[in-house]
Length: 118
Image (cartoon, rainbow, N blue to C red; front, side, top):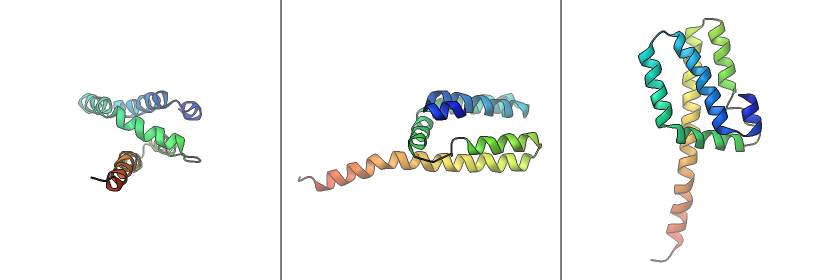
């Protein structure tokens, strides 16, 4: 995962991230949950790619791996509460990054549209 981040390989990073999370979710023993999550990943892969690409392009940002490291530590310690909290933090962070990227073109487009004569 770190190598993919270093190389700027967004798709490889997302594949590794999903593989890591799949291992953890499989441990929950709920195949329906895992199937649902995998389906959601497929449906939002384009958005996740946008968010990951923007983060890779930002200098000094480690948001793409800091949560995974903490999540692995929580899982190794069998700390369910910490794992749930870390997962939630990661989702909020990713959502914020993706929303910022999706809003950026609208803001630029809105400024252009306002400055053009009718």
